[in-house]
Image (cartoon, rainbow, N blue to C red; front, side, top):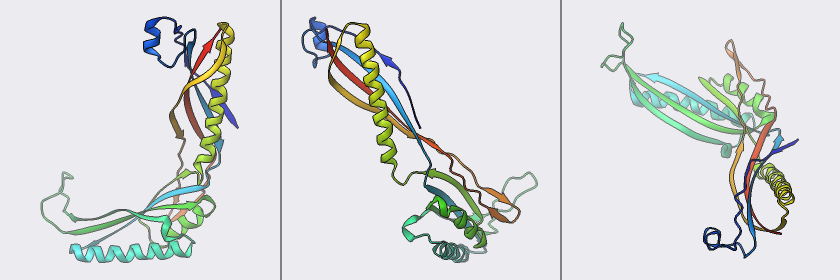
Length: 235
């Protein structure tokens, strides 16, 4: 599905005048400048799910907390390997160890140190059709938090290229419309610029009871590209 729209501004300056030639030096005498913007949109079904998973462990010392956390993280990695996730698809996004303080009656933490908490978070990129199995495997392996998924395209340039083509075709139609309205002829492209390219993204997983339920449904996402095209036209 392709949906397109355009917004445009048309400063028309005949290059015969000295001031116009200074402002737009690429125009030849007798030419007018028509500036057109257009946005092309293409929708597709994402094929990549992006997840963040974390484990944490408490202990009396920072060394013991890190060791306990490393053991939990290793169980996660083993579970991911068993679910078919390669090492290249895993990236440590955060590793920390912090002191733990007692909570007072007013909810504020005291100054005393009662232990340490180590945390480890991994960022994962997995095919959408494996995401549910991966999420369930993480829950079984003791993941303390799972965030996501957000969705992406393995080959975003393919859809971006289609959206760009749609934007350019729309810009061409707009330019012809204004050329006809002002009795001009479309002559040549002076400049093309791409101001934006964006992808929609949103989703959630559902946690039910003590086990992660993973109804991973990526739906459709829109890829949009906006282009600005300057045309030199003459009568």
